[in-house]
Length: 325
Length: 293
Image (tube, rainbow over all chains, first blue to last red; front, side, top):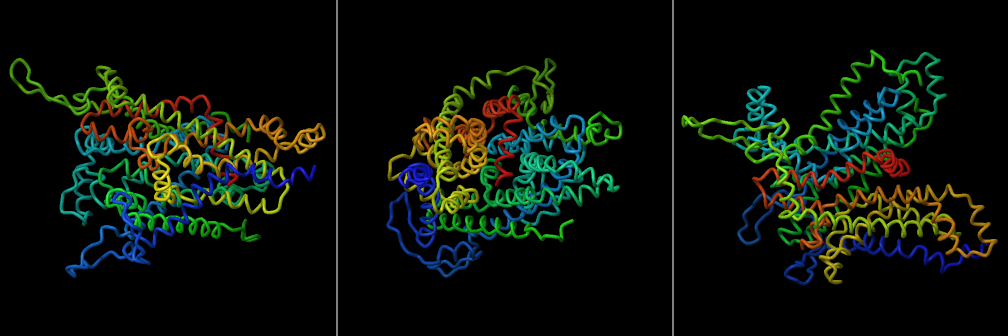
């Protein structure tokens, strides 16, 4: 039997469909993207590929550029720094607001509260809705016109009278007064983008954590209770260390998800520049400016960052052996 | 722990908070469905002159049920918005992707777990790279490849890239399931004269049905909701999928809320209805995808 099982042609044929898809559509394109990032070309005009060295990286990482003809210095609309800052802010908000919220609720639900599965199922539901739909729905909720739900609610409660002037004062990027254009200002657009993300994904993290907590052996919990541990102590010293692998997955998802995020911003805002993310910048470079080399460079930076953060987070969560508990 | 399941008064505050969260969760959907059934006048508010010639202002109806159920919004979203066609396109693409992903990942998993060869651990790790690679990474090269093969604006332009990006998760989940199938079965079949292909097709594949559901659900949601590839690789309405269709509709009807709400509802309800019946299964798919990762 051993011989049949290690017959080379069979092994190759079994792997073939997966290899063709995986190498053809994931691995080869990444290598091509890296190659493109050192070139500039225009697919629409079908120009030849021109080798530009590190020029694309320089353009993306400098906020000010000099016009080669006039010598004038101007603000670079292709600057990647802001987009990266925005996605890191989203990553931080997701990690430090969304995940603790999910953990608190998961801890409460998993202790056998009446109707826990029903609660969980409802909280998880938004995960299944397309992010485009959620973006569009929230665009309507934020609508500054008479139909917008959020502003109508704030007006009905009278909160707008002090909240809007306060936001107006806080806004430095524009002289326009704030009258409820949530996605119209740099200062509010990112928060406006985070709320739907929180709404959609808090249930996802909650589900994973809930499943993890349910997997904690019952005798471990009973022993702790017999030793007189209070609920908070059980959570802190037994459950949370036990579900560390799941917390790690949640943090990786939250951070890489924020880096990759595209659909929501693209659907939520007519003009994405107020909350520009690497992926929306890439989309603009590729399909509005036809700068295929520059767009590929953003893709390369994204791949590198996703891997880097995945490794860093795994490192931060590595087992410190006896130090735990 | 079991007796704690009973409804306790001390839990009242907790329940109250949980119910507030339920309302926050469901309200946007309720709002979407109600405005999909309202006229623009009702959504935005309007004014009219009464017999005495006074202007009467009618404020917008934000949260109430529609005064008049405007089903015409749905007719418009289906006809002018072409949502029916996009729905069928999304279904065709998703079904093909699921079939390809399941076949390719089961075959690869069989080679990775049941066949004996050097380097299979490395190969498994290689496939797992796909879990971290963002979909954006492939856009320009895949776009050039598709345009050279004249595959832009076809179902294939979406099916193969989606299947490639679903593959890593498919293999990850399948490895777990296939490991649970006893090896004795292979051996017995081998002694009966079966080769590896027949063992795979007649013994392993039928026992992988639970994995079909898990991989299928995960893959379905990925491609049903995908926007970036669908926007770039398909520009003709003939092959457009639902998320892009919804996005386009907003361009056409910037000020007409009713049909927009109807389109959003048409794109959302099917998944929600399936979820109501299969919630446990769907949740398990997500847990399997994350925990084993």
